[in-house]
Image (cartoon, rainbow, N blue to C red):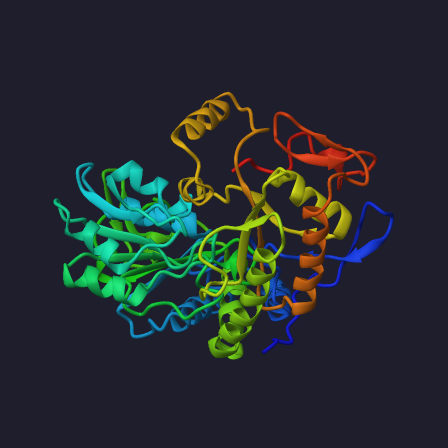
Amino acid sequence: MALDISLVGDGLLVPCLDGSERPYVNLDAAASTGALPVVGQAVTEFLPWYSSIHRGTGYKSQSATMAYELARSSILEFVNRQDGEDIAIICRNTTEAINHLAYRMRFDPADVVLTTVVEHHANLLPWARVATRRFVECTVEGTFSVDDVCAGLDQSPRPKLLAITGASNVSGWLPPLDEIIAEAHRRQVPVLVDAAQLAPHRPLPRSADFLVFSGHKMYAPFGAGALIGPREFFREGDPFLAGGGAVELVDLDEVVWSDPPEREEAGSPNVIGAIALGAAVRELSRIGFDAIIEHDNDIALHLREGVAGIEGVRLLGPRPTTTTLPVASFVIDHIPHALVAARLSAEYGIGVRNGCFCAHPYLVRLLGLTRDEVDRFRMDARNHIHASLPGAVRASTGISNTHEEVEVFLRALHEIAGSTTTPVPYRHDAHSGEYWPEGFDRPDAAHSPRSICSPG
């Protein structure tokens, strides 16, 4: 079933190498999505009422506070946590939320956090700062089983936390979360689910102890995300950020912190971002996950089978018929990943992502790189040489993408994979690894002194 939904910016015309302008085909939803129209409308309507919240007695301040707290309530309803036992801490994004939780966990360096090699860096790096990490390995298809997780849980010492992705941002694979969480809880191990990819596509697990997600991946690109967890967990201890708004009383040698969630949101919060996220989750709830899942499954099969069926193209991750999010990461053996992405953009007006997708350990395994290759690439990275770093191309869709757009992409990919030349020479930046067609101007190139793309 196709969803009849448009996002702000859908249908924009972009210049292409042949001199034409084409409707932009945005296949980069796994990185960031456009805004739902109701989100843009909610922000526009709120802007005249913007004011400092929680501490002002003026009418605008009181109105802004009510709107902010309504957004918080909507977030809790979206994750089915509106019973008062959990709180929603509004922060910038998933990365900040996990760092926030890592600080509040008060781990000893010898404590173990069990995580997986499938994770985004946001769910790998913060735990390395505060604890000892133990990893669940994956198969050549990029998956692991409940038994694999149980083996990690049963190793000694027992983990103090399981930090696991709800869906891979590289392959779209969906771990069996409900069973995994049940096994962790059977062993008295709390669970954090990184739901950055999952939240716009599936209902979030009610049984997880902690949830984190980002508005910019769920049609609210205004800089807000959420950390969901038990109110009692945050009731004691000092918060991740210290400052105004998080306190009841401050003396020069004493502080009395506010109750959660206020103690976790020091400083003036991103009220606009909260309004946007609240509007987005209400709209996603109105659309309904039954409709979203049906649309996702339909598009995912079309996308992944289409990519896998093109000669010379290798789809990474599970086989195309496996139920995944509508994500397809792939490589073309004889064409660098950065050149594929550059050609899709410049010649066809199609936006994809290339590189390692902030999931280096996972991509190394999906690509099947040897230890010698990894060591060589590590040396290049240390020397800031990005031209030869490994990577893949990722096409990902959201609720506004159509089968027609997938077909446009598949035709373009077929042409690129079957070609031995390009319409014009493409310049290769040896430092950044980027490609760009000669004679084709970048957007605002004069104002961009550095590489547009990150090598990660």
